[in-house]
Length: 574
Image (cartoon, rainbow, N blue to C red; front, side, top):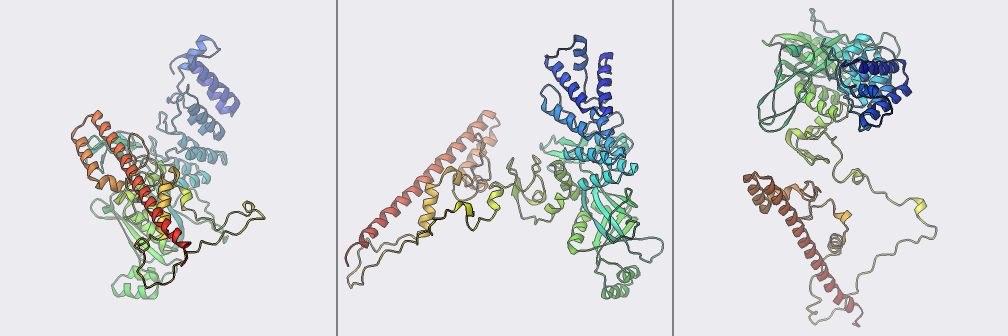
């Protein structure tokens, strides 16, 4: 550390953390904030020592020390106090020490249930990255498995797993005879490629999905900005497939009690190195067909005892196409088989979706639900209005800002069904039933003479008149979701400088006036011209909105004038 005073200050803080004294830690943080703000009542020497103390440096790992001691309350105190005090720097959740271990590494390495599990859950709940490997190659999940803490293993796997469940497993061995055994299988996010001892061989090369440019990612740098197209490129973690043995007890209720998997496979990100396909459902017919085709092992798999019928198999291939491993599984439902096959057939895409969901604060399983959506279901982010189409429509979180999918522009309340009746307490005892609808005006008796020309005019239907009145007399709150130009589509595009989503994307793309402004703006790269052109677009949209409202109001007035002669003819004697 820099000097003796800073070392004494760190010894004081570390001693309070090891003793579990949350009050002493809070008092120290208050003195540290006062010293940085210039309001400390301590001596000049102590004030200088506190100012020189950096809680994010590897020499003062306060967060890592609290996690290693299993003190979830002090971990939360350090994060909340430092992130809310303007005089203190924010504590980095994924800050590493000299051995590239994060606070999550330390929390998972100490098997002190239930304190270690509480500390792991505290860090994961604040979006700590569980896919960082230390210098020795261990991830937080590896550290929890090595410590033998089942609670920490289940907590971390619950955050990073894409699919988990009971399966019937058959691994290809020397003998061709199949042997189905019940196992617990988990497909999860493993580690990022530029972490661990692998980064010592050199930087990792990634390809930008926007322009195809090759980028160089340094060690422990997880997000890059492409110099060609400006897109944000993220390093996607590998996937891992773990198979656990069932509990040894003969209890009918299966409760997993193993912390270390029997089989642990790191799945390659190249689809050409992984072959996955569905097996025919177990039956005598499928066994006969496989036997006629000369596939003895497939025939035996269909006849061997298995409580689950929906099967799948996958092979891990080497660089030269050699089979490194082959495993077969049977799951309970067709939906589960479709999910597992979707992950194994495109592991890079599954890891990309799960990583985005994890970065947004959601579990990795949220990516499975979004991957089952049809590709023709585009959606727009409610925070940055980025339109997700084609492959991006399958994401569970926004590709630009990371906001979770699901909060549409109309709000969650608009999707709820309307109540059939108001609550009972809102209805008074003397409430009368609603009045009956007004009877239509009486038509005059038939007459051989020709009807009046004014009365022969066609009258607009009542429904259309009511809709026009609603549009013309609606308040701003009722019209906030409609495009201010066409008054027909929903406003899903924000306009600068107002920042409100007051225009529809279809009009902004089709309208020729906007295209001319856009082309002029594209040719001139000046910021002043950009703002001016956008301001003109904003003013033009509101002028066109006022014109449309005036037209609707004029139509309503004309409709009212046509109804007045009918009201007068209603009281005329026949």
